[in-house]
Length: 343
Picture 1 (cartoon, one colour):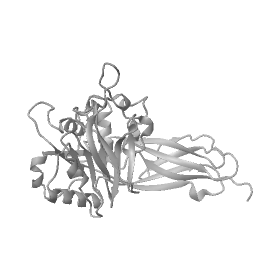
Picture 2 (cartoon, rainbow, N blue to C red):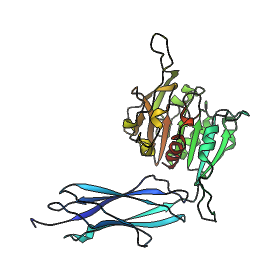
Picture 3 (cartoon, rainbow, N blue to C red):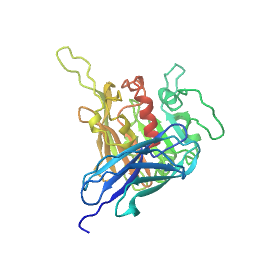
Picture 4 (cartoon, helix red, strand yellow):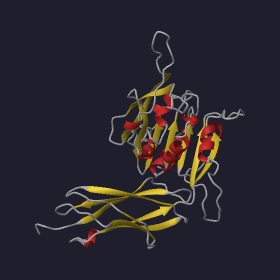
């Protein structure tokens, strides 16, 4: 027909792939006007496991346009849940007025942190700030039952000198290398296979990182596992007549990686104010599986991702301690670490 009305639910997206019972998740529902003329649905509703949920207005949608409504939900139990988004609207094609997603809520997410060096000094170890970020104190007292609110992440920290004792990586979902100089070949091969099978690897190299090792670390496809070449770890060049120390900052407008999207708004995140004194200069490999997810305000990469099989390798160009940047001293540090791990 020449004149017909239709509002369709075209997407239901979650703010992070790893969802647990530990904190709320944002659910974005996209509604498109695929009919003729402007349409104004009554509301958009989100139901969980068949229970009547919250309904929110979506407003007027022009012909050919779409609009999104964001909900927030905290799951109370782990396991599979059925999410249904419904647009309430009298139109000519009711069959696309809803969309169903099935999401598996995690009870725990195992993380192995391998640190370059361990120290007896308070916060002196390479993974000291990471350890605190991955297991922060609860914000408010809550009842905790067998499946009640609890920390999703279960982190285990070991020094690189003891990494050969880890024989199996499949009990972890994520492995983090915190300024690890190099790994034994057997361990490096095992981690590469772990990634190919669907695991996540986050590399945060510092001054101790052996670029020869990382640049020659290959996956099963005989391509560089990291998707980049480490060139040099160096400070920002001093400038001005007084040769004052220079700093770089993460540029929020360059953030394109889902694991950092929550930090892209400078009005709610202090990421852009973190000062980076020293960073790794890198050269991303020219291949389709490699992408720069965020950059510094001097144009250099800050986060690079390589897709390998069913898994991912994320590399930051600064370590996650305070030696090269003051990131750990900012409010953005904990959510940044968590979001990258959830991804």
